[in-house]
Length: 315
Length: 315
Picture 1 (spheres, one colour):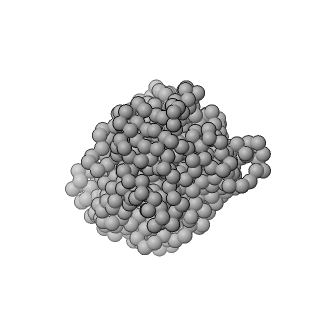
Picture 2 (cartoon, rainbow over the protein chains, first blue to last red; picture 1 turned 90 degrees about the horizontal axis):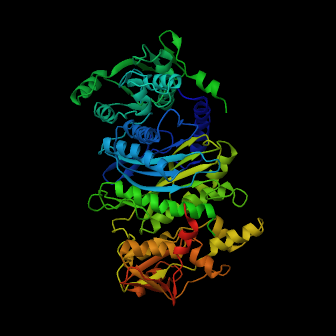
Picture 3 (spheres, helix red, strand yellow; picture 1 turned 30 degrees about the vertical axis):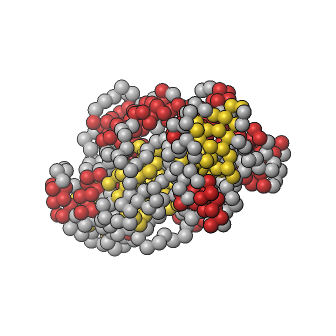
């Protein structure tokens, strides 16, 4: 489950990003700037994707529960998930680090390079420095990707009547963190989901090929991320079900975040099922639909829990 | 002048980067990974440049001597200097920040956006979070650039006999920091050079057009940066003179860093003089030559001071 510090950060981040986006000049045709999973740049032969992510010690990770190798892996996985959520393929990344330059750095790089090899996104440059005032480790990554000439799938293209599907069950990462907090020696699939998440790159490309109109990755919780997609698309959302990972509670599946499954809105859910089958992926799960009323957020007969987060957050 | 913390960081960074570079697979033909000012990626219509820089509070800046707007400007300027040093033109950047999300953030963005507008490199995405354990602000930037189809100018192409020129006099930024430490209300060109450095983008492109074989920006001091160029090119270097900015000492000009002037090695110095004139730039200053003996580092009859730095540094 997201930590209180992360929740505070999330609410502040939403507001601060909105403030900053309002200051920017409008992007040229064919580009998408702040406000989606990755920025879209107009390349010579099709769109380029550009995204950055940062983890700060005490906010995003706790050295007692994850090794620095896990932190390195997870940082790249999270950043690649932003590329996946646009229907893209990663090309290269650069890393910047303020922190230890000794064994810590090697451990972090172990995990980073494992992920770089696993997901075909080599680290091609970096910047290293001493830790900031106070000593907390801080690592950022920037990834460049491509859509291989296809239009990128943004958060903004969803339409009323679109089916909403998710690439897999949710809540495993949150369950893993809960298990680790109870017992730092805990192991198993939920712990692995927390420590070594996997970006759904093949599922993202399958969704783009299948005609996805809108897509987002579940990085901060299904409720919050669906709300973002719905707001960007100017629609409402009705869910029938929340597919929950074996070790997770429904609350973890709804609000946990860091699962990095993809949520896809498209007219023809059968096309996404077929694209997953063609790519050898487990079938996506249909969970609901987009509706015309932009204020609607329902899970069966109840309000979809999202506001609770921001409420508890308060900066 | 670079702070003791920065010096420690520099020596550690050199060593850590070498360790990390050794772990990477070799880049494919046409690409340059860790070890130059920016990474070079093979694009569809010519090279792309990709670089990242990070500033950490207490290591790279002191809020008592620079406003956060200055910190934002300087971070982008330093990163764009890496693009300039490859002969490139910036395209877009993304920013990641761990720190305050309130007024601090707005001040930082004021400077960042001023620089983005001044140097035509819009901020297209970002990631914001709470500060790391200990509270020190940490900001990273990644820039994407292009060489407009020209081959990039790396550090590694210098040959014995090449003339060495610098795009302008050195030491102003270090002098400015010294003046500010004596009197935080100090003003003038040296203080401006410290707070609002200017990446030499036009000079970098002029050098590429004029046939530069090797180039580096003076970010850590002429001695250290020339040593990097000489090592990458497998040559030695002999300097006749160190052009010194009006308010600077010769030690500041040699070791100060953060001037972001460009050092260029090429066969025909007249071609660089002509390219500067054609671009409406002040003439470059010839300061010495590359020589065959790779161990040679001379300033007139004396050893070129570089080792002193790493010596004092010690991690």
